[in-house]
Image (tube, rainbow, N blue to C red; front, side, top):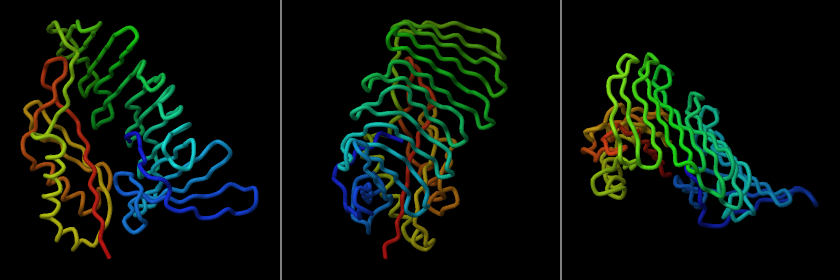
Length: 297
């Protein structure tokens, strides 16, 4: 989950249960986590102030599950300070780490919905010092492991096939690196690399054009969504391959919703993308896209 920035102060102060006890606050948020009126909200937060700590628990209104627990300096929610934890719909943990005066500090870890560790990063004053990332095949075996050290300016990446055999090893010191390729675990080639540059996959015209494409396609399917009589959210994961084509489209949340079926079709049939590149070479890239549909009364 991305770092959350709240642009407004709280909506409603509910009550103080008794003299000397902590006060409880209620907030309502739209799908982008901006504070909004209750009638148009997708999430709600329950906040409790205890001394110098303000804890907020945020819930998905439709699905009634805990989305995250965060701590702030005060009730305005302008500065994160303390432990942050986020969760998947099934209740498994997504992310955990600490903020200090709005900056990430110390160890931050992220897990996928199956409980596999995907990221472990050490921060100092909001800057990444060391990082380890992991990706997995559908069968659960490790696909890729990357470590980086910003102080020593070193990067190492190791990838494996679905049987666990070595596929490649990449090592960089500064901008100079090497790429070792393997077949059936045996070394077949060594190439020289001259850049660490990584470019994310992008939709022609940028994010605004991509967002408009989704909005237009959702509008075309509005009658179907209304007929389904379902409000909800889903998140779609897909791959932009080396040629810019969309593959491996799947819903990772809200799988049973009609919205997810429609969202998968929208993503799958999208125009060709600009592929991602890594170390000067085109690569496959994972993307995730949230969708929300709310029935109005």
